[in-house]
Amino acid sequence: MKSAQRTLSCDAQRGNGNIPRGGILDCMKIELKNSLPIQMDEKASARSISRREAGKRLLAGMAAGAAAPWMSSAHPIWRHFENAELLEQAEGAVVDEKLAFLNQGQFASLAAAAETILPASRKAGVAKFIDLLLSVDSPRNQAEFARSLEQVEAESSKRFGKDVARLSSMERNELFTAISTSGDPQTADAHPLKAFLHLREWIAGSYYSSEIGMRELGWTPDRVFAEFPGCSHIDVGH
Figure 1 (cartoon, rainbow, N blue to C red):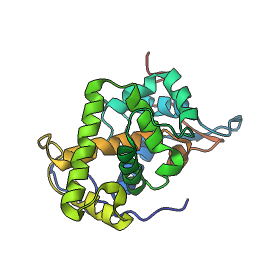
Figure 2: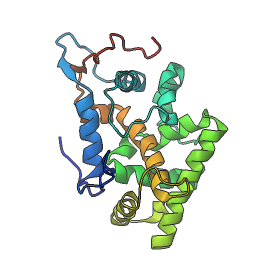
Figure 3: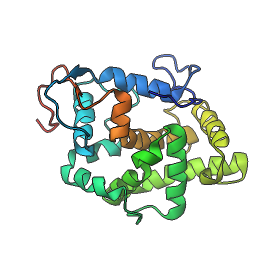
């Protein structure tokens, strides 16, 4: 698997609050990949994995306590993976150019941010999927997303005099690196780091529930994720 250049810093380590050097994207992928054990399946015939199935796998890992540290069960994106009808609708929404919730400016900035945080996000339809989820979310969660995006945009304007969508990839890397090393994730709501982490989980959840994201974690048609310890069912409602 060809890996893209990773330039963002890792999250603050639990326990001491120090932010180590290294790629935040590599950390995210490694943490999640290690939490999703895989096994060979000689009888497997599926050639793809749907959002619905990928979402079930991610939720099962979270329910069993095997999910990556950056995944929070309180984050609104994970609740959507219990909605099978919505996830089936998402399969076709990616190719539909009409936006369901975001305006064009918000969508452009989100898509640009996602591609910088997780390369191949455009191909995975990350921004379109988030737009669909937001369209059926609560007004509170919609407002929180918009506020987080506004805070990151404000930081972009402060540092570069332009919005995220108009930054070069190098400038976005510089911006996100600066934000991710700017303080404690538990800081006040108005802090750009908290806003960035909120947006990043929307992006990561959308990316890793796509076939592209699942393949990056190790899924192939003949290798499936094994059942998680303490959880003998895929469904999360048991």
